[in-house]
View 1: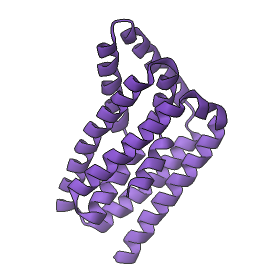
View 2 (view 1 turned 60 degrees about the horizontal axis):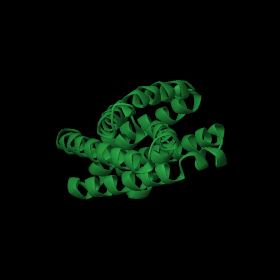
View 3 (view 1 turned 90 degrees about the vertical axis):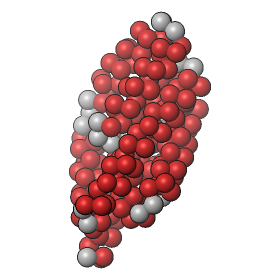
Length: 193
């Protein structure tokens, strides 16, 4: 359960923000902000997923989630405005950094929560896992651990990863991950109907 969330996070839009922030600010602040933000968003998403499985058949959730994953993967592959969005957010955080570390930390947490909840593959995966396993606590722990691990990778590697992987390679990897996960969720739902 944690591995797909980890991979999806490494190829997601907030990963680009975390990688970029790690090149400009202290890594421990970026790591801590990402860890706190993803713990908050995981709690929200697991709660939503738990609510959904009480009212919507699991197969429908899997079909919808798989379709969303495929659409998101294709959309993110062709959507190229994320660099400009990341630069805008970085500039906002640079202003906050000049006003103190705590303000930078709180601003980074807030922005990451908003960015993560604005539509993200890890949320869809988390809801799919809540539907599949039915254990909200287990899924919450798995999601948080996967997201914190991804945050660690993104902040530790920081600008080195961006030198190793071109933006085009990251986009292709992201597309492959989302198509694979989406197709698996749809096939799993169809085989269980």
